[in-house]
Every structure is written in C-alpha cells, then in structure tokens.
Image 1 (cartoon, one colour):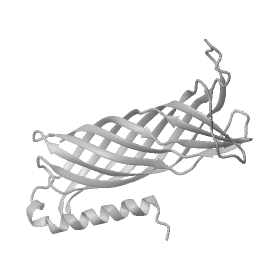
Image 2 (cartoon, one colour):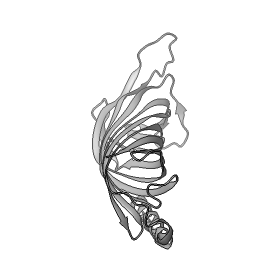
Image 3 (cartoon, one colour):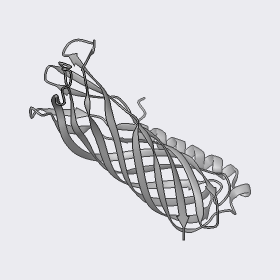
Image 4 (spheres, one colour):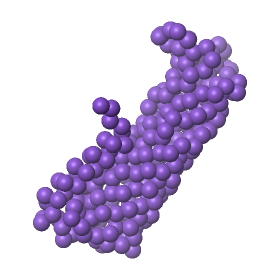
Amino acid sequence: MKITKVSLLCGVLLASFSAGALAQNEWGNNADQGPYLELQYGRSQLRDHSFNIPGGRITTGSEHGDVGLLSFGYEFGNWGFGSLRAEAELGYRENGVKSQAFTPAGLTGKLGLNNPFGHTQAWSVMFNILNDFRPGTGFDPYVGVGVGYARVDFHHYGANPLNVAGATTGTTFIDDANGQPAYQGIVGFRSQLTDTLAFDLNWRYFATRNLHLRDTAGDRISSTYKTSQILVGLVWTY
C-alpha cells in the first residue's frame, strides 16, 4: 500500500501525541496560554529537480539557501497531550543553481552543462498546528504539521553550453513561476529564556504539489519543489 508523505506526517504527529499523553502527569501543568510572535532564520537544501523538455530532461542541483519565516500564533494552553498551538506563517526561501545536466530522450546518461546559472525563490503562506510536550520549560520538544500555498519562481535557469571564456550570457531554458498547495512537517524544541522570550530550534520538510510551467520556447513542463530546512528563532509572548 502506498503511503503519502502527508499521511506519514500525520501519523508521526498522532504517535507523538500519544507519547505526550503518557507523560501528562509530569508535564500537564506547565502550559502557558496566549498569543505569540516568532521570527526565524535558517538554511535550506532544495532537492535535485528535473524538467522534461523537448528532446530530453534537464536535472538541476541547487546550493544551500536562505530561509526566513514570520509567524503569529496562539497557544491554547493545557489539554490532554501537553499544550496545543496554532499559527499563521509567512515564508521566503531562495536557492541558487549549482549544476545542470541534460539527459537526451531515450537515454539514461547525463551530460553536464557548463556555467549553470539561475536561482529559485519561493513565497509561502502556511497554517500550522503544533503540540508542545513541556511548555514553558528549559527543554520543550514539539511536533507539528502545516498546509498552505506557495508560489515558486524558477528565475533565469540556464547554462552556457559552449563554455566560452569570459562569456557573461548563455542559454536560458526556464524563466517562469507557478503557485501550488504546499505542506510541511516540523520537529523541534523551545527553551524558555525569560517570562516573555524563548529560543526555538527546528527541522522541517517543506514541499509543494507538482509545479506547472513553460520553458522559454513556450512548451509546457513540470517540476517539483521539495526542501529540508534547519531554522533558529526567537519567540515573543505577550
């Protein structure tokens, strides 16, 4: 039976909730309640992605990039599994192109393209549900899932196949953007620094549905957007 990534993330969340229930007597009285604002910065790894174009397929490798997130949330306080919170999140992600390779139609080998260029930008709006297991303490592990929408821009993807010395321009294959539903899974911990300030460290997997684009020749193409991210943040409660 095929299990989707969303189903797997939900399963992890439910399993973690069950673990929290077993520890309710120890952790259940630590919950805080109220709104909070969080600012996060981190680094992302955009997985290799391919574009099927007339005559073959281009596979792109990306550099590590930057991530910035701004979240506004509300912690609902004590319940049976720790402390539940919900938040709205605005995000920006960017990765530069590191490599380009071309696979001719009907073949399996890849031909590396010289002097690849371009970058990927993604803007997102997400709605997350998270559960803290030891809220308000020095070590508060949590898990969460999120759904929303992301617009991804493959900006001036291309290469200079001839590798001409000193050349500043090349062939642009793709310069297009598309918006699709997005989802993410989150695992992390918080540490309370003061009554109103907390430190946050988390890992998340963020992805969209398949993106529908056009190459520079006007042909329809599709690609994926899947990232792994490590972020640090500061949380203000008020």
